[in-house]
Every structure is written in structure tokens, then in C-alpha cells.
Image (cartoon, rainbow, N blue to C red):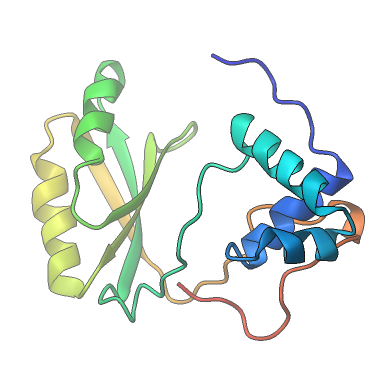
Length: 169
């Protein structure tokens, strides 16, 4: 397991927040908004990639517009000595967006998105329960979502997430 990551300084944090707001910002504009030179911005971005802070650039997709209007969290209990096999099988579930192994009441939490209730029913009642390591599952439907940015500015200074309606997904 890798050691602890050094904390982000104010400039690095500002760059990350700006890129979360718009991952397509040209480096010149990124540097201008961060109040640093273009060469410094390139150097900092390269360092953030090498350190694994920035892992890639992706498009944000509205799941409903993409045909996956139904979302649910599925809390799963698995056979304790077989969690690795359960994890390997869970990642192959159709519609799986996110999987977390957890401590506490449940062993795993899944976020699943499907086009409709019939597909979700198939994922939860058929596909999930065909996994031998799964003991039980509880499903909670998502009625509404608000997605804050993964990294907020430090101390309330610097760039902030765009104001306006909450992003839904």
C-alpha cells in the first residue's frame, strides 16, 4: 500500500478545482484564472498527474438523458471469508456505476443505474442473487441527486463551483 500523499498546496488545489469545473480549459486560461504563469501551470499539471491526483479527464453525462433514468443504492451482505470473490462478481453487474466495500451494517454499497424498473429488478433480483457469495441485499431508490464537486476549495478561497441549479445525474 502506498504511503500518504503530500497535501495539495493552494495553487494545486486551485488548479484541481478549476479543472473540475471545466476539464477542457486551455492551459493559458487555467493559468490566468489561477493567477500563475503558463509554464508554472504546465509544471503543476504534470506533477498532479504524476502524483496520481489527476487521473484523467472525462465527460459529465446526464444519466437520464443517456437512457439510465432509474438509480438505486444496493446494500449488500456477503459471506465474510469470500469478499474478494464477491467483489470480483459484483463489478460485472449490469448498470454498476460505483462499488464500495464498507464497514458496519453492510459489506458493500453499489450505485446502479438502469433504463427502467424492469432492468433494475433483473439486476437486483436475478443477477445479484445469482452470485453465490451474496447473502442478502437491500435496495433504496434514488429520488433526487445533488452532486457537489469532489474537491472543494480550501478555506473558502479561490474558485468555487458554478452557482445555479444543482447538477443532477
